[in-house]
Length: 221
Ligand SMILES: Nc1ncnc2c1ncn2[C@@H]1O[C@H](COP(=O)(O)OP(=O)(O)OP(=O)(O)O)[C@@H](O)[C@H]1O
Ligand SMILES: [Mg+2]
Image (cartoon, rainbow, N blue to C red; front, side, top):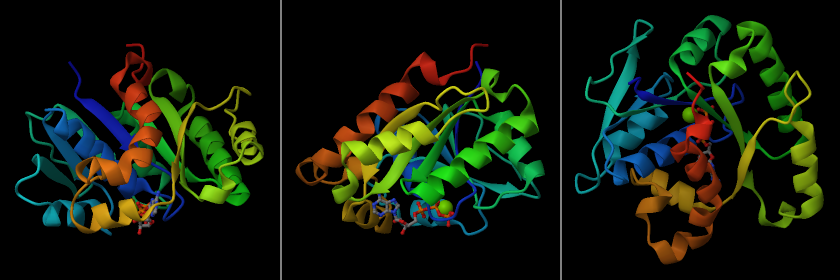
């Protein structure tokens, strides 16, 4: 069976790729999977996170790009790929060809949503019928509590469309929370912080995790 491969991608800087990648890696690792976190970004945020990860937490392997190719431990069950901002078309095609699932964090602001939609359209023109080969979903990230209102959410949902006019699957909204910053600092995920402090964040993650655990996030063949 093909290695379960999840790509976290959005060319926009600072939208939460490394945050999602590290938290997803931790989720699968806590659940007993052999996880490799591939840091494809020379900035090395995921690698930094792994470097400070405490020994008493579930072990996550590290993979980095070496001359454009990724050396992944053979026993890896779940591969999470954290990617850089502003990735070139050539590299983009390489990342996409490897992945079954793509998670795209988007800052829930009109400018970022428009940029995300434009990028999705570019993606389709680059790879043709990409949707048969890779499942894509978006996550609204760093949502301020005061924008968690129906009108803004509707705006978000209405504005991410695939070139065929269909809605791009939208999984969940993650609030802006210091929990992510505290966790990242310590090589942890929000799933490894006190449940009482992260209750709300864990709830927000549920739809994304259910999707990632289901065959809905896998291509048909
Ligand atoms: N939901 C959130 N709440 C609070 N802070 C967040 C949240 N998501 C991300 N951040 C913080 O925002 C900053 C950018 O996030 P992150 O590094 O994950 O983005 P990125 O897309 O990987 O950036 P880059 O494009 O530079 O690789 C980090 O300091 C991170 O801790
Ligand atoms: Mg990053």
